[in-house]
Length: 108
Image 1 (cartoon, one colour):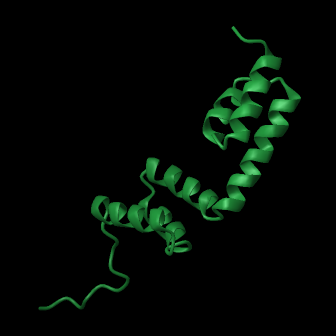
Image 2: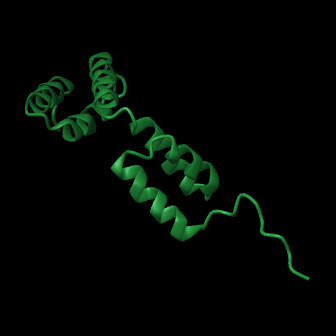
């Protein structure tokens, strides 16, 4: 088993190689290490800057897991220009078609 220091060195090398997910996995395994937590925070901040819709997509995914499709749809519509949002909106429409905003009049 690698020491914390060795794991930090490996994570730093992965970050330099832009292998952020692999570095994140190592750093998340060091919850008591302040350096690891600092680097995780920086990785998360950088990820949010790269994709400003990321937080919205994460929230929408959680809503879908809870089968709160209308709320997820509304949230995804705020970033509807994002390709992943478009993909998820189509999937939600298949799972739970949206109700019409106004019902047609009933015929007698």
